[in-house]
Length: 258
Image (cartoon, rainbow, N blue to C red; front, top):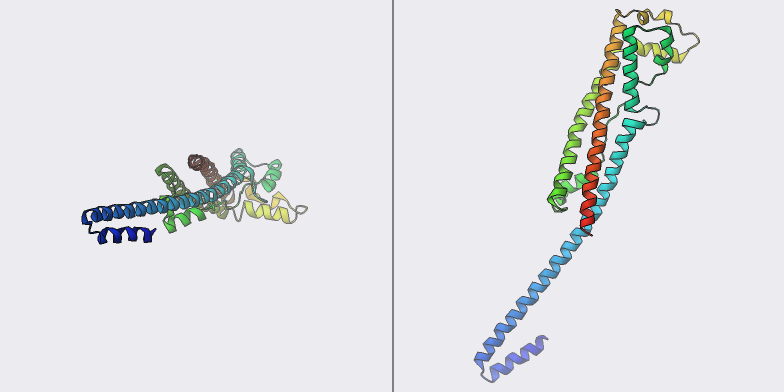
């Protein structure tokens, strides 16, 4: 093709047709510019296509992580994990023990006290966020999709970061409750489970004495444990709802990009 255009130029020059030569030269320049523009558009289209496909992969990976977050929040809050009860069961058992303590502990309450599940463990959030961290560190978040999507993602992970701080505070508050009961209720439970055949409430005079320090520490401790676990229960169910909302936004974005 280049040889063909070159032959035309030489022919026009040799025939001394300057006017026609300049017209031809301008036309050739226009053709070159059009070719460059087409090539640029193709490159842009190809680049956008690659970006779109890469974004779909990232969004689907994020959906996988969000489902893991949702499942974790639901399990800890409402089902329980391994040997630990759910937060819901634990804080309700704490509330029941607190009410019982205010009407006065009885011998018949012992079975509930030593076998009741009052702790759901540490119950930390441990949010999966590796894809979000990748998006932030690489700057890909701001080319991921619509402004609505980007805002929803940022809001979700900022909210999770804030809730994580509250979660740790609530858990620490519950742990303070255990510290208060260490020499009273927790020692009673330990002794019972180590050897229930030799266990006797006569060895724990505080059990029947609401004015004693150990009895009152049990009430304060149970109250702290209940409050911390109840707050974490509410927070985790809220995160589950936030996760559902973000999943919906991502699925909508993916559907629109098809």
